[in-house]
Image (cartoon, rainbow, N blue to C red; front, side, top):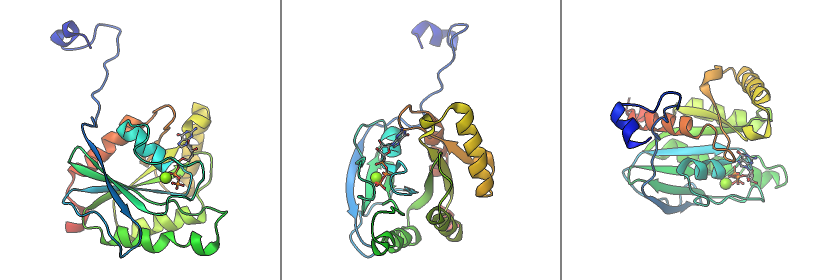
Length: 223
Ligand SMILES: Nc1nc2c(ncn2[C@@H]2O[C@H](COP(=O)(O)OP(=O)(O)OP(=O)(O)O)[C@@H](O)[C@H]2O)c(=O)[nH]1
Ligand SMILES: [Mg+2]
């Protein structure tokens, strides 16, 4: 907005007002990885938000889009590679945790089940955890692992935001139809699901706004 427009209290007639960015990133720091349920993890006093989803669903890409960095979190062409929980501190105010992806079909059953103790241990024991963003691919039906994960989140009682990724792969109408379908399959309300694309940035500000609102609430663990 120009200085003149600001002085008038708004944009010129006919020009849409740009809403303020809910998350302006001033500083970012990689805090390190947690590799096992009882292993090292960064200690801090800040609230944490974790990002969960099937391998290759786009967790690292979503994190990068959220903080507007090209390569904060590693984006893999080879799914199933991230075996640790990676922690990133934002604005000295909160911490984002990139969880390892689950359910990659081409790794052994044994390694497929590896995610459970690490992710479950983290979710149950991290004192600062304030919420989880659960990612689902807009083009796919939720898998058995997705349901296990959502059941686990519900059982623990952590506030959860469901985000459908890669909406750029479908037309607007097809994406909206898929959101309705996924909501029906998971018995969720349609407006509990946030559409997102790391490629176009669609949904980035909505997600950022939801996260800031979540972070502003008292921890559900202390209720
Ligand atoms: N078109 C499109 N491609 C995407 C989007 N998000 C991620 N991808 C692609 O999907 C692949 C996997 O993305 P990642 O962000 O590495 O997925 P991840 O969930 O972190 O995967 P793991 O770490 O293996 O669990 C990459 O090739 C990305 O470029 C999106 O919004 N649109
Ligand atoms: Mg990743």
